[in-house]
Amino acid sequence: MLIRPEAPADEPAIDRVLRDAFAARSHTNHAEVAIVRALRDHGDLTLSLVAEVSETIVGHIAFSPVSVAGRHDSWFGLGPLAVRTGVQRQGFGSALVRYGLEDLRLRDAIGCVVLGDPRFYGRFGFLSDGRLRYKNLPARFVQRIVFRGEPPTGDITYARAFDLA
Image (cartoon, rainbow, N blue to C red; front, side):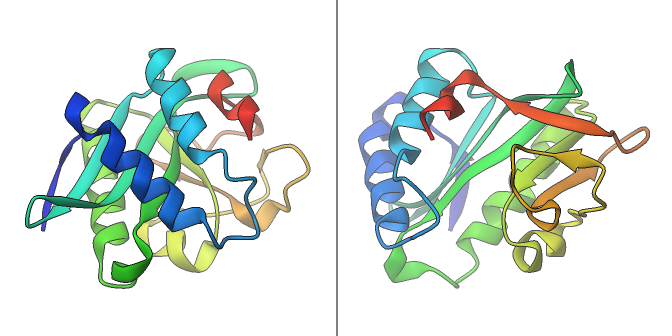
């Protein structure tokens, strides 16, 4: 497995991975492809990584800037994260998360937020303490990892591309 930054030629393969990974999911409106494209178009795709096996892209992860309580100060949002259905539960998603979080640390990010399953994201150090809010989502699904400083409190605002969701 190779984890690397996306290249322009990867965009169609990333679209296929996103469509495949979310096709059967009931918790989504299937806007992931449009969100990632809009993040790119608006210059908000801070970090976009792919997992590749035998020159075939099997996974993708995106990170984009977020604000917390109206402050834009080096906080990022993880998502979407996608792995093709035929190769899920083989470590590709975990590798993408670990690699991406390390890259954010090297960029001197303050922290990262994610909306998702605490059982999965908790393995990487994400916590939900009720201090962060995102729309009407239950607090246990709103998680953060702090790289430096104090944990923030307040509402999370994602890049405008997420308004498609």
